[in-house]
Length: 355
Image (cartoon, rainbow, N blue to C red; front, side, top):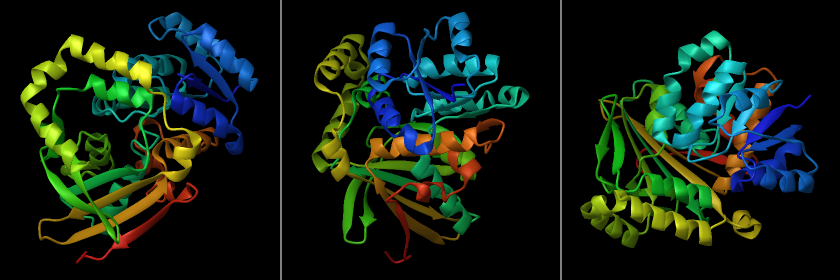
């Protein structure tokens, strides 16, 4: 009997998951909407495959029969996640995905009670978005239980982006950034705030606010009401982003987005093995309370796409082994802040208060 369904199996990150799945003892059924692409992939890896368009509920339900877990990798997830989640609710299938899109997290939270009634788990963000940052958020919350503010920053040193990631970014062009303020999501300019972040003891980088998934998940996991998320960004890129605030009308236009999508489809695939082997992902976090008491920590792990494949498989293995909670869940809320340290070559350290 097949163990998991990998939907969006012909994508870049899914390819890494396929390569690593056997080391977690996981059998995969490839899935997607293109029979031609799936057949070629299935022959190359000697794996079974199933075909269904997410818009076809009957075909989707048939594809999910006898499948205990779906690992959904077909983005942009704002267009695909709800359809797959609805299919999982109809068929009683656990749902996992690798999104980092805030609306998808918020959308999934609205299905919490339905998932409880079906006795399944819905969990988005089982990759670099948002496992390491979600674990960091809970770790800091446990160190400072009355924290009222949280900042998280990410950096993928020497890394690159995949076609899927770039296309997801295009979907959000011109929409500004976000923060969570007093428990509510708030739209702010793209370059709402910039600051220097100590990703290493001897290495600080300039970062700017971005609409990272933790604005939804870290709040859900920790209850901290004020959250900002940052990404390491070169000064020139920050200046360009500030300029872009004056051209949101252009960035939102259909023709500009289609132009960007065509360029991405022609020029991007994803980082090769050599790049992934060299690159490292980094996360920094700081939490503080109303009295000004603060805690900080940082962690370092494999390159972001490699880490995504590893954490996705780690969580999938947990679900298959019966370690899951019904309803909508976040990674650290179910598996704890130490989950990220189960990924090979990942370390975490506390930062002294005066750093």
